[in-house]
Picture 1 (tube, one colour):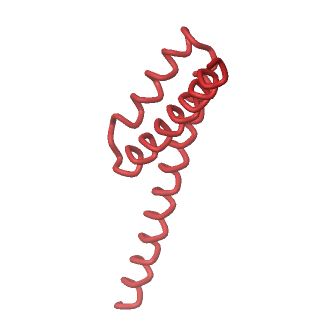
Picture 2 (picture 1 turned 30 degrees about the vertical axis):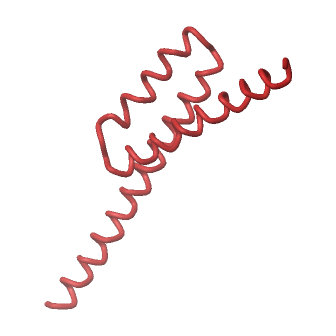
Length: 89
């Protein structure tokens, strides 16, 4: 009985962070303002449970990596557009 409780707790402790990571990734991809708020809320909960701080930090990293990749993609496309305009001239 005790092993099943421990196993259940471990599964919950793995499912919740991975679910939050996925939600953060989806919000960052859609460029939602909630993508910044969600990690802040998680970091606020880290006052109660310090282990949650790592989850909040990882969520911020996910947000900034997605933003950086989107910016790089946009810059690359704008360079291609500039080259196309030069070709037309």
